[in-house]
Image (cartoon, rainbow over all chains, first blue to last red; front, side, top):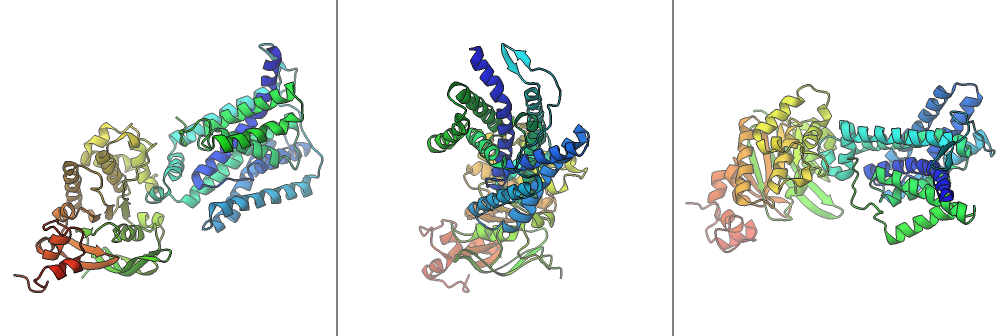
Length: 290
Length: 261
């Protein structure tokens, strides 16, 4: 039992990251109707930028904030330079364009940062904490705290601000939203910016756990997508829950079977979800935060 | 003479290769209630969607107080004072009544007058005030129609367009909703209403256009259309000929149109 708890403790940190990436998939999918496969690459971009800024001697807080802004800007660029000009095309076409963005960002990262993984240390030094017989690293607590803070911030944005409600309205009924002078192109820009910023936040808290490397975008993107699919692609909280369960499932698979399981678990879950329950485990939860 | 608030000139609109409007000329003057009546598929919805900017016309012109606005997107048309209450109401089901109303004023969300405007909508539709915290999806059909109208009014439109406001509503509720439109006119809102339910529309309209297969088949003031034999047979169910078009009804009515009483 304590062994199982230990797997859970080591899985929830990564799982929270998958969840944060997945939230971005949900926001963009609901507002624009497309799946953005560059989602994991914003995480990569912020992570590597943060490492470089730290290496350049910038203090932690400004370095991380600038890195998050860099990730968000990549989202802005994706929307304005790629998605918006191609808006009249089918969602499938736009989805393929996001794959192009992902490949371009990965190439750019390879040119700038090379192939070697880089990292910085945990936000707070010290030995792991003991919780119910399982050791949980301090950085994992940071990840969970940041994830909770992001969830609350997003909840506040969508529930308490008119712009957040306009984004929900755009997701519910695009034509009706346009009749209220809500511009879908602008909502799309907000969605990409927010999704990229959230992925960027995930990236900078993740570095001490996994390091940052130029081709981390694809695995984290696909796991974030899996997390979003578990939540049915419509619920941001569903995506967070999906990410946590996926992270734990991975850790359990690695712990009991083999480390080769890590990738297999996510893709098995994704395939099973898409074939057996494409509406998600939390069906009928529309883009709702209440 | 002042330019009409809204005018369309030779308006054509198409879904792919299927022409839904074939040269519609229509005028709405400030302070009027104008109805567009016609059967299902006659092009009423297309007409309103095109004027509202949800569809681009394939040819022809849309003029707002003489200014060319053809092809303007819906977001811009709302800012210019044209609001559409869409067919089937299309309120935002998951959001509260209050949020729906606030989104109606989205483009003027920084203005201080919003609270007063909401109070005006509540005065017009008291039931919305009672249900302000409920999700729009939990309202009855009539309440949703009132919410959709209230939401459109929050944009402070000069021209309020309504697409089939009677659809799916009980006769008593239809009369209630139509009555509110007259109240709106008294407050200076110009109304263009598309209705399959010709009797309900003609009860409140000053003038009406009859749309058939994408063309204006007939137009005139209310009294004239109510007396018009072809309208009576085709749209008011006076005879057994319901579902016929004006031209067919004209053929049937042995007296030619020009030869009234």
